[in-house]
Amino acid sequence: MVVSSCLLPGAAVVVPSVSPAPDPQTLDGAAEPADAKVVVTPNGVVLPVLEATDTGWLVSTPCQNEVELPLSGGQPVAEATVVLDPGHGGREPGAVSAAGLTEKSVNLNVAREVKGRLEAQGISVLLTRGSDVRMPLVSRAEIVNVIKPDLFVSIHHNAGTSRRLDGPGTEIYFQISSVPARRLSGLIYEEGFAALSERYPGVPWVGALDAGPVFWTDPQGEDYLGMLRRTKGTPAVLTEFAYLSNPAEAAIIATPEFQRLEADSISRGIVRWMQTKDPGSGYKTVRPRGVPGSSGGTANCVDPPFS
Image (cartoon, rainbow, N blue to C red; front, side, top):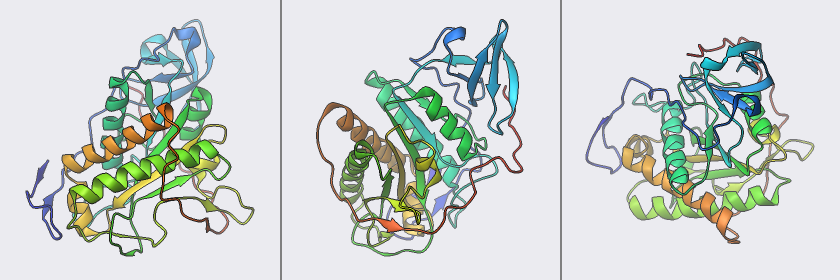
């Protein structure tokens, strides 16, 4: 990646045209074939196990098809303390900056950085995708629900209508019914806001006026965001670090330094959640939304290759 050495507003950035290479995800939670909850293929696709067979596994694909996978088809995994979800992927790029930086690639880079930091502290981690593949929300949630980790973090970067703020407009969404998820959101926000404010004081940040740890509700008072609604039972948050639609922020989001700083913040928030009783900070009031859409399913879904 080649970037301008200037990190001030208006800095130019040259965006790489290739996505991160697949991650085979060597995991501490590796298991015997009969004990597998998921199988991670050589190209980073995570497949929930429906049934162990004499020659491999019957698995659920990202498009919710049932496929027989041989023992040579991937690494069996029985457990993980943390599941990280790099949002978007494949033909769903997410937000795209004016310079062409895709959210899906940044999400995956940051998730890998968080994974490495947590594993260095003895915490087992599984990514919902280790490569540039489309994973419908229903499939990502299925991974969480079969692994049953201690916590789940979906990693995103923001875009859209916003206004000038004095500090980073980071939003961390948490499940409305989960006190542990609320605390996790406050800890990650606390770490991220402090780190970004200190390192990038000259950036003209944008965001919503109630940016911070927050939750969205549907008309029934339930979680609006599908990724949180579908993973009830596991403390879950969805992070939106900085705005790709703001050129000044996009210029720094593209840099390895920013991505490492973001990963440090998320990792520290997770470790504090596990090891302390710190309450977190920055909590905002509820944001009412409309009826959730039907996105997240498998309409027009095409399964990626598994090798």
